[in-house]
Image (spheres, rainbow, N blue to C red):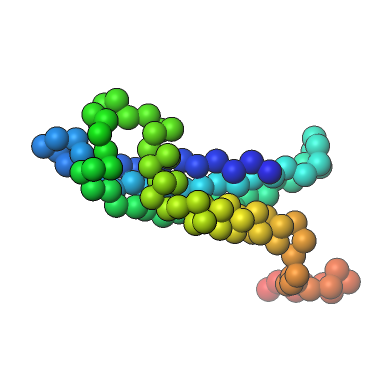
Amino acid sequence: MAITWNIEQLERQTSNGLVTTVHWRANASETVGTGDAAVTYGATSYGSIGLTAGDTLIPFADLTKAVVIGWVKDKLGAETVTATESGLTAQIASQKAPVSASGLPDAWTVVTE
C-alpha cells in the first residue's frame, strides 16, 4: 500500500511571503489483482496547520513540497502522523473486507414503472 502526503494549498502574508497556514492531504491506495480484474482501493485524510514566523525561514518562491510536508509532519508530531497513516490503512482494510453490505437477493426482480 502506498501512502502519499500532498500539499493542497498554502496561505501566506502578501507583505513578506510568510506562510501562515498549510492545507494538507494524505492519500492511501492499494491495487489488488491485475489487468481487467484489478481493483484499486483508496482512502484520504485532510487537515490544516497554522505556522508562526519562527516556523518559516525559506522565501516563498524557494519552498519545495518536501520542505512543507516536513513542516506538516513536524507540527502534527510522530504520534499523529502514525495515527493518520494507520487510519488510512484501516479504511482500505475495511473496503477490502467489508463487515456490512446492502442490496437485494439476486433472485429478486426489481420492477420499474
